[in-house]
Structure formats: structure tokens, C-alpha cells
Image 1 (cartoon, helix red, strand yellow):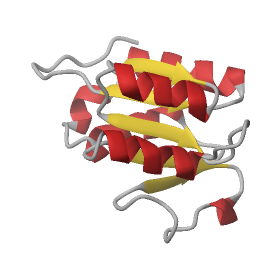
Image 2 (tube, helix red, strand yellow):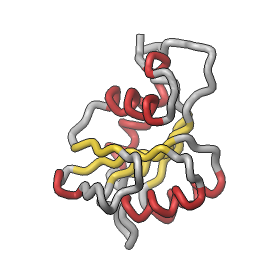
Image 3 (cartoon, helix red, strand yellow):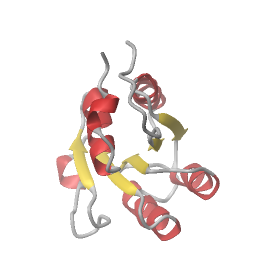
Image 4 (tube, helix red, strand yellow):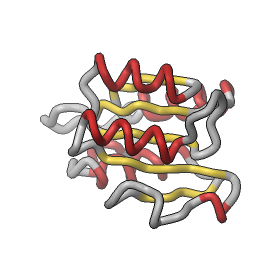
Length: 135
């Protein structure tokens, strides 16, 4: 699949997912769609990426290991990058509490199609979703 090319700066996204296979599948799909992708398996590693990389969006699982969940990660990431777009994912629909999540965030239930995530990330980052549709 070749991404549709439009003269526009690519979206830089951080995928935080503790399940390696899901993380790699989504990362590969988003890379093929034209995103610049960073990955992490837990919140601590994700915060190191947030502190050191250019990012437009955070796509995080809510249920993460090692003490900080995706909601806490998103709050901390927004402190460091106030304009960061955030999309949460979870296999438990009741995991999304709009009151606890960062303002303007989106929730996607698992399972999801990686192509859908690309469109949501493009929209959330204020970019043209057409750039991120595979030809």
C-alpha cells in the first residue's frame, strides 16, 4: 500500500500499548499511512519519548503496566505538551471516564481497525485525513 502524498508535514504520533503484537501492527499500519511513529510499552518509556521527540498526537491504551495508566500518562503528557492530541483505546468500554480524561480526547474501543486510528489521529491533529488514507 502506498500512502497518498499531499504536500503537508507528516503527523508525529506516539503509540503506547503494552501488548507487543498490537503495538507493532498499529505502528506498521500508521507508518504505511504516512505517519512518523514512535512506540512505547509503558507510561515511563512513553514519557521519555514525550520529553525528547516532536509529537502531534498520543494514542494510548488505558490499561498500562507498571503503575501509571493511559489516563495518567495523557495528563502528564499534556502538562509537557499542552496541544497534544490524545486518543485512548481499551478493550473495556467502561474504562473510559470522560471526567478523568484530558479535554478533547477521543475513546476507541478494542478491537479497532488501524486505518480508523489513522483517520482519527489526522482529524485530532487538525490535518487532512485524506493524506492518511492508503491508495
